[in-house]
Image (cartoon, rainbow, N blue to C red; front, side, top):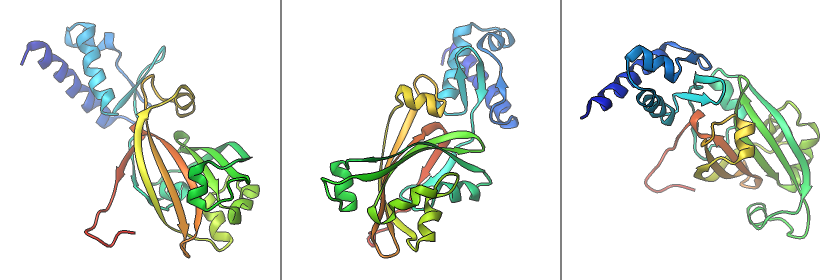
Length: 237
């Protein structure tokens, strides 16, 4: 192992200790400050910072500095649990900002998921989801015709609570997840760095009678989440 590798690992270890004692959003030393403290080149200091950035422990904002990132939030893959409820369980305050609520022609995937008339229109609700004011995900929900009216009174409320209020309780879901780099729009809305990563969960949620409620795409800020799943030998839906 070269001396340069030893030095950047030493800096990375120092930063991990600082982060352990800090709060999300706290400013961290700059590359220049680290280089001076450890008497190394800025390139070596920058390499240490990039290692921790790749681990999701810090974020670099051009023109502002380096900051402790938000702690990742655990989420169960395929869970029908609402964003509001899951955040509350973790002691976080969930809020939403409606990006748009429109009628659109359904995609082929929407038609198959919700058993729609391909020539009709469908209610689409797109929202930015936040926890303690931090943008966590962008959610685009295509609603089944029988529950579309809940959009009229959704502002500031949980979509799933609105389903329960009309007797359609979200009970289970099917989902799959993929990863990619965020688009410019997603980086802006989710306040992600230049090469921020998105986890896309495509999900169909069903009610207590196994009838589809919504077909949803959620684009999560990957650095703010960890995903878990439960796997069994047989018995899956």
